[in-house]
Each structure stands twice: as C-alpha cells, then as structure tokens.
Length: 407
Image 1 (cartoon, rainbow, N blue to C red):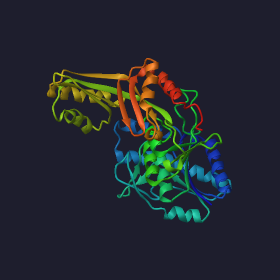
Image 2: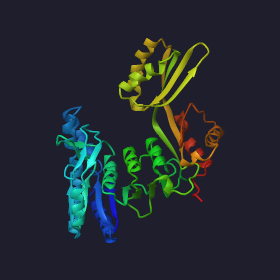
Image 3: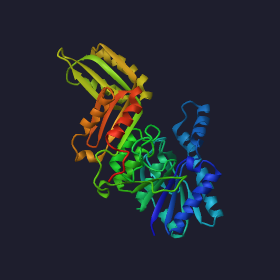
Image 4: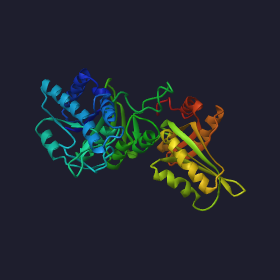
C-alpha cells in the first residue's frame, strides 16, 4: 500500500459534475489499495470573484481580512468533495489549513509554510478515511488564517507529501503532462515522460505555468516525486524527479518562453565603481525583480547599462530610473516593452558542448537578432523582439530535435 497525495486545481473542481469525477478518481486510487490525501483549490473563478468583492469595498483590502475571505473558496470545495465521497460509500474528512494544522509565517497573502503537524492526518488515514485538505492556506503563530499566494495549492500538496513521506504527489491539471514547449505555439511539441526538478524549476520560472515555482522548489528540497496528470483524460503524465532517477539526459529537454518582459537601458552613464549598485539599488528597494543584465563600456569612459524587468513593473521602474539617471549624470533612460525571452533548458548541457552555438545558429538562420544573452549551468536564455517569438520557439524546437522521442 502506498500513500498518494492528489491535488486538483480549480478547473478540475469547477462544477458539481467535475467534483463527482474527482471523487471517482479518488475512489479508483483507494480501490488500488492506496491511502489518499487530496488537496483541492477553489472552484475555477471563485478566488477572482472573492477578490473582486473585496476590492469593491476597498481597492487595497486589509491583508489579514483578505486572507480570511479568500480562504473560504477552498473550504467550499473540500466540503463538497467530502460529501461526494460519503455519498459513494467512502469515509472522508475535510480539513482546512488551520485544522491540519499547516503552520506558516505571518506574511499575509504570500505566507510561507514553516511546519506541518501530520498527527491528525495519519490518524484519519489509519481509520480508513480519505483526507481532503484545503489548498492555498495555513495558520500563523497568532492563530490567524494565512494564504500562500497564487498557485499555493500546488505548494500545499507537495509540502503535505513531504511531511507525510508520501510515495508520490500527483498534480491533476487541465493538461496531460509537461511538454517540450507550449503546444499552442509548436504543434510538434511532445509530452515528456520525465523531467528533473532543476529543469522543471527553470521551465516554471521562465513562463511554463503547469507547476508553481515554489512547489517545485519544495519538491526538489525534500525529494518528493511529483507526477503531472490530466483531470480529464487517462495517461501516464510526466514524472518530475531527481536527476539520478533519469537515464542519460538529452542535451535540451524543452524550450520555454516568457512574454512578460520589458527592457530598460540607462544610456551613457559614467563608468565607475558602484554604478551597478547605484542603478539597481533603488529598483530592488521598490521590490522590482531584475532578470537579464548587460553592461557595455565604451572607450570614452561611459557605459550603457541594460536589464530586463517584468512588464507590469516597467512604468514604475522607468519612473525610478529617470530620477536616478539624472543624479548619476546619464544621458538618457530608454525602455522597450516589445521584447520576449526564449530559453533552452536541459541538464544535458552539463555534459554536452556546443549548445549555445547551435541555439545561436538556429536563430541566425531565421534572421532573428539576439539583443541579450543569459546563461546558467542548465539554461541559455536570449532576449529578442516580440514579433519573432513563435518563429524562434519553432526554430529551436526543431534544431534540438525535440519533436522526436528520446531514444
């Protein structure tokens, strides 16, 4: 008998019919002889509805009260699923985050899990019950309800799997696994049988939205095997696991991309020690994340300092830098929101040379100009004009042979 944690997202529990279907999946897992802990999100659209109500009262709702409000969405779903299981003859118990308890810090709206007491869960499982836990929420040291931020139900599921030392954490979504790239952009995209934690973390951070980044970090830290499956079709899905559990890694496992990019250049700023800190310090203080950075130094002792931020932070960053540039004696601050980031990801890069050369050659073949480059041990990212996004993704997908199954 194995212990399986199953997580179902908002679309999977979007109406009563789908909740009944989830109950049937849970029963099938029980029938196979396994213990089951289920984590569910709010019904699709419910969190947005509650957030809209809050903002009709106050455009910036009180964080503690907002958490109290938003947590109710998952409470509806856990109760309905428990009722469905009872009706079908399976003993079940629904638990909120505070009833488990899932202990978090006090950062309302973006809390982090600090500890999970699994005593009540283990007792319920030993009694033959299916345990249904509200995702996305916990309780802080003051006894207040907290929420984990968007996508927090994934993190809840992986954290529970780690705390209970579950055999697997199954994440049910509206797709049937992790693909080599977005099938809506490249029709030849292929579902991966396996992907490493590191690759999945890079893919998630680069825009692949199948798994939430924090949940992948949790899985990697605690070595929780995670399987991504479809709620609406049967299939093996994709297993996210450690590198040692994968066979010889391909050079590149996937092509990720992000449209949420903007580029800012501080033009002709005097080149002197501390200039990077002087430019990026105020950006960091405003809680704006900086990604790719490029610095070009000219012979006249001036430098162009370029970096990327998320598009929704662009106007704020430009406003900050106009003041900073004046103080530093820069000639101008220029911005560009018509860019995207495209990345090749694969742990096989560690042992294969020439990945960057192949990537750049494929883009050059399509006349796509590279504006910026960023690399890590298992990733190469380029910033290009937005109009070339789909062409670039298809070109790179073909160049690395990702439409073919690994041999």
